[in-house]
Image (cartoon, rainbow, N blue to C red; front, side, top):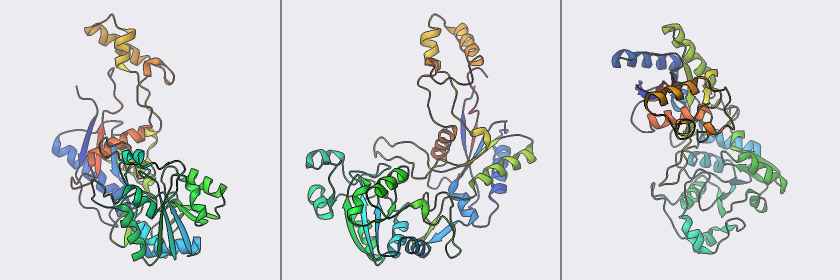
Length: 393
């Protein structure tokens, strides 16, 4: 009777140099034996990007960040555009960037950052007379309009926090507020676009208005600096605070790890599962308004069986429309038959209306992120079973 099952799997504390593939396989198979379940074909074994990067030792220091910024942008005035408001995600990156420049012009979007962290309540914007589409505010103008607001969950005034952090790193700090990235060109033409999912658009717009050296966070630590960790595709994007002086980067070996987990399980059990390395899920908190998705992607690496979108019929639609005159066993059999004969591509058909139009890796990765949590559950591995089953199986 069970449909999709998402099961958090406990693992030992993983350190640099550990064999992450063996640990994942050992942990899943130990859980199967202890809790009395069996692996099945098309089960998904997922492991969080955090422990993959940790096992690989993919770390960098603020000195490494500073050296890369200084080399690529010249070490004078640097514009830092649209960073997210996060002590864990961006504060250490900002410290390293500031150490690599004489002055930072920090441009924050308002009333919130890209992933939904609010500087102040949106209602205050409606009452302020400020036009968020056109107005560029100085720090003084911002304070006059919106005051000194602390984040309701963290208790932090991020404007003051980031400004102080820059100054403590030895750089002059100027804070401005705007929602069109090209506004930074008035202050400096050397820029780092720190937004995550809109970075290429921001970069293009800044160049179009006279930007000269315009980078994204993907361009910082895209190669090793002084023997540091790196990520060729994402650079600093997806990094997390490790210590007060270091960040753990998004894993550079995620695809290899996913493929090797599948291979390891097949060799040890004969069962062909799918595997993935997952980052932040993609979902929004209805109270705090925060999108979880601070990583560049949900699926950092995954096996081929997870490529694509769901191809599902909407059972409610079939029950209320095509088979509205049926009930009981006759209704069940009719729906099962329709599922078994469905085409391989239901795009555009009313019978699939309302099914979630997202990639499998985004859906499964979000499920895994919610299952594992981000605190002390100790389950960096998630086993998802029956995901590809349906009412007709």
